[in-house]
Image (cartoon, rainbow, N blue to C red; front, top):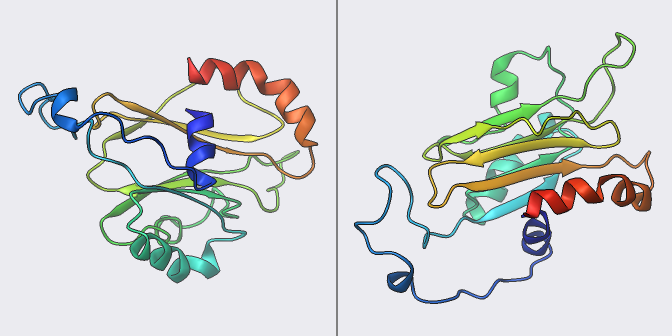
Amino acid sequence: VFVAFLLLVAGVESNPGPSPSTIMDSQSAVPGSLPFNNSIILGCFNARSVQSKTALIHDLIADNNIDILALQETWVPSDFHPAIKCDVAPPGYTVDHVHRPSVAGRPSRGGGIAIVFRDHYKTRKIDLGFQPTSFELQPIIISSTTPPTLLINIYQPRSSPTSAFFDRNSIFVCSGMA
């Protein structure tokens, strides 16, 4: 999933595969779910503060018909008013934030990640059983697709070398693809 996400972000298109009628017929779909043959348009944006870029983010979503947008460096502290936190999601969308934890009782500057998704997607947060210290992590399951889809929003701050990130987290990345 992580590799597929990176390929999509890099502009690499996947093979469309067989026609949808050979994958499933309309009677095999789970009631209330989106059929597997519906595509999801993903986007990824390092915002460096969503507060001053809400109009830009709304335009990015609308202009590209994005279903799900992963945001990094939202710079939205956990104590912000809910109206400010939700402002990044245009009408018809919902946002889920993961705030950068405070350091030694003080709020940290920067960081934070979020996923903006269309209201009709049913999502749930999942616990992967650990709290990373060298990167920010936001795993969700989109349960309204058939089959359910795992989406992981990952942000690694510049403070940690990229090679160290992959060395420490290769087991996590490989297990996420299994």
